[in-house]
Image 1: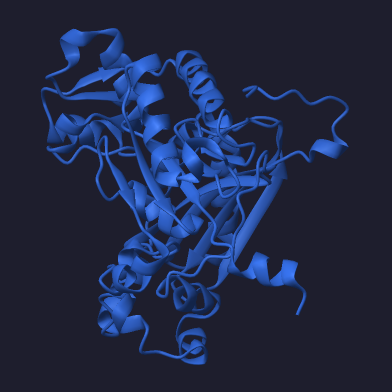
Image 2: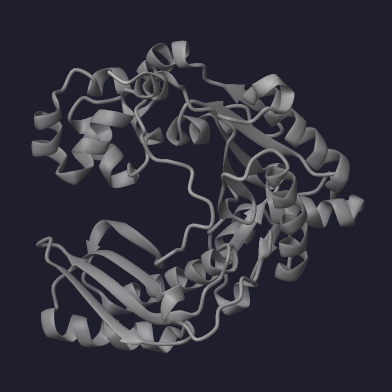
Length: 362
């Protein structure tokens, strides 16, 4: 076998995942230190059926979370200080932070304003130590912006993202290649990508609590039981992830969805949930990096018989009335209880646009 191929196979990737700590709220508290010991959230007001973009860790002690309806957050924490979204300020801070990432590698894949993957496999900085590079990046962010970031270091993207949340806030966690086997054994199945509340419940009912439990299943058994997700479960429970860090990834679409705990046969309840999903989509769009022109918007409905219907229409901006109209038309045709609702948008292809300008230059 060719020596270069052998060397490539033996090379272990070094991936860093940086995740800013309660980014929007942290910026607001930095700019107004009197808020430091108070529960703070950033989002739209309850009067407009808004949702939260983020909250600080004091607010989270009350159960307040990002993407939560503002009215719910205010019920959970009556002392909550709600601040309006100042997206231009957050984007400017993000520009400076992402420039720091690029000081260490050209392989930077932004996931949002406040997080990114960085491949430092071939970086000469810090004697090639991904751990030291991650620490240096965190130090530079703290010195330049007076903000804290958590970092995960691992041989692949899946484990790096898991690791960045392991010691939040303001933490650094490293998963070495020799640690993977023992680390993933104890990992709860709900920490795996693609495993939401419904899938987690299904896994638990089947006796799968940790990755160690999943490892007892063959690939074919998992695929028979969970379909496409079975392949991902088989790989993730073993700490396997072959995805590369891809800079300047062009996003094709953006969507949010919700699975109801019980099937809903009241269209008014569905429309209320649709409004919340619309607000969540707006939050995700604001947080998208970079924002591309919108080509269309779509709605996804899964009924209690597991029939799934998707409707799509051309649009250059998100309009709730379009989502509402698509839902009303679809529900009127089928009139079955609804199990899942989702809304989303498709972006224009860059090569089909007469002009395209990144909104966030790095």
